[in-house]
Image 1: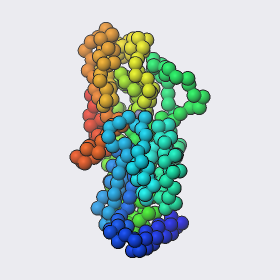
Image 2: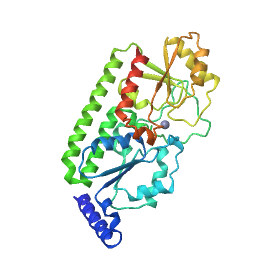
Image 3: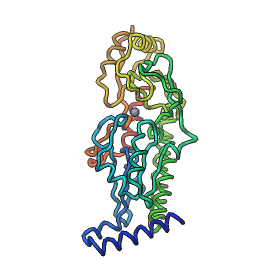
Image 4: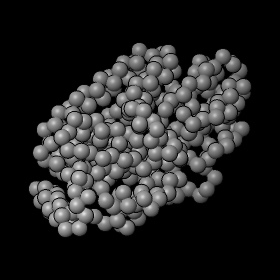
Length: 321
Ligand SMILES: [Zn+2]
């Protein structure tokens, strides 16, 4: 209720400001402005606001394919956060900049969703697994939670529910449409989730090997898969030591793996080295998309979160069979 009052007050203030000073901006007062950090969140918003009567402007800030783990916002990013009605971000280690951005751009009408807060009972800690490259810098004492939460279709459902709730409180007139869209979208997420589960259940391989960083912990643990990887999470470490390479090559032989995995941005050198070090050489390199380097162009072409997760399922099918 408080949010609705806030929203009405906001509309009233914006409309009166528009009438008094800049009538040209009046066209903008009825639209909902939503800013997210990452492509998946932008896409979820688009799915939930589909066919709404109110214009919805969405924008994701990390839209140039740059590394999300070293992102620095521009002045226009901060302005967008300041002026939006709804801001959605992950809330992990790489999002520390959002604290400053939100402080610098206080806006009491804005709703802010920290998705790691939404998922607090489902978060997983970053894991140093046997064979992984240790990070060079000193270890911080506190444990960090893995921030690649969007790679679980089950997390996605919970995030979408929270997004729908915020949208409905911002635009109560559209609430029943948002709920209907959410229901349809969650059904699609659940169907895909069931296909993943079935694929893994029918597969003969239960351990995946990543010759790369490993942002897929949420995804593979949803389906009870095990893994080995060269680097934890999205470690800043770029070079694998000979010990790491030898360990992973031995795992390829021991598990008789026919496929190893890399991320979308891999130059595959590490994967090639591991294959060359293994006794058996007949190993394919497969690429899973972690949705970390999506661009505005991808979004403009109509590529969706579900499409990429469907493609990832096809890759997973090869990897487990
Ligand atoms: Zn990452």
